[in-house]
Image (cartoon, rainbow, N blue to C red; front, side, top):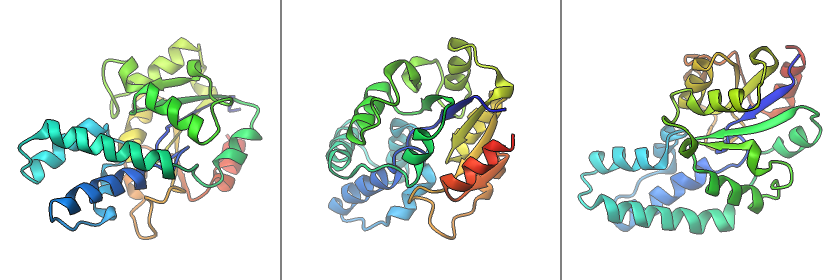
Length: 219
């Protein structure tokens, strides 16, 4: 029986991966590079700083500090206006009697702000929110998930992790926890290959929270 659920945050609870991609598109459009949002979906699950490093190298951006500052400014503006929940997640959480936690590659302050924007701050309290800045290594390392397990004395056999990216699934699998993939976020366009999740250790991948919930009941 599953008594504990650990959620990733971006793309699992909030539909934010498309917003981050939109921010990058806006930035590069201003440079005269007209890219598409889908080109950035593959970076989902990674720390924003790591994505900035990769893009700085790919597009030969010399002033990385300026790039970082402008991206975070654009992201903050878009998030404050457009951040929404992943479809079905509120019903799923509100009808669950299990213990819930968040384990994310975002920093804790940003997660707490996001929860407030989407009105889930009364459901996930601060001590249920874990982030990369609380551990030595971010995902794909398992550190954040191991910390949740250890801090809360969770039984691995009674715990499941929900992820939306290969990076996150790999971290969960490395922690020795059953992991299910969810592709309800808008960054999972119709022809995106779900083997990204299966290949990194997902036991199953689901298009919506209704089918994922049924699967959890069978464990």
